[in-house]
Each structure stands twice: as C-alpha cells, then as structure tokens.
Image (cartoon, rainbow, N blue to C red; front, side, top):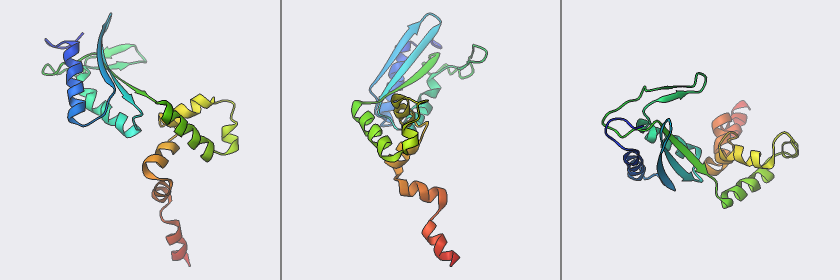
Length: 165
C-alpha cells in the first residue's frame, strides 16, 4: 500500500536520494510489499545514536501514518499525496565485528567487576545495550570524551574547589 499513484520503489528511491542529499551514509535502502501494506527498510552500519535519530527524522515524511501497538490500529495521520509514502519506514542499524570488539574492550576496561559479573545480563546483551545507547557510556566516551561529559554534568570541579577556598 502506497499513497496516490506512487510505488514502493519510488518511496525507496526518494528516501535513498534524501539520505544522499543529506550526506548520510547508509548500507542499503529496500522497499517491500506485504499482505497488509508496504515498507521501506533503511540499513545502516555502525551508526551513532545521533545519526539514527537524524535518519528517522529525515525518513518520517515517507511513512503515511503511525502504528499504535496497544490497540493494534494503524492511523493514517501523515498523508501527503505529493510524496511516495509507505505504511512503515524501518531502520536497521547493524554493528560490524570491529565495532563489537571495540565496545567489548571498552566495557571490560571501564566497568566495575560487579557489573561485569551480573548474571542477569549476558555479554552480548551488555554490548548491544552500549551500541544501541541504552547505556550511553560508550558513545559519550567515543563522541565527546569522558572529561567533557563529566564537565557538562558537574561543571568544572577544580574551579569550584578553588572558589570555595
């Protein structure tokens, strides 16, 4: 299901062009028809949390509505007859082996022994939580550096100590 006289392929091509125009690196964009509608999948590799948010925002106009998981209803609340739209625009962000190894090394070097020994979370789950930014410590370190993150949270601690004297 697409809107107007547009095809799924046109929606995929439009999204691909939009990503290219915005200089967003992607692996593949693929459209698919299925029994109850249509979808375009955008495949990324090693994308930062900021990039995934940017891609989601850029692709949003090409999705003709929203799905409510509580009721199972799909609401056609974003119709634009001038755009090739599909029912769902899905984002897939895959982690390469090199990034997985980097995140695991970060985890082993920076986490307390108690966190590493937590049996409720598998090693793979812990790495995925860091990659998907559920636990933001990896991306904070990689993108901003630990010192800048701590300074943003707590201010310049040395300056505060000097001011107190």
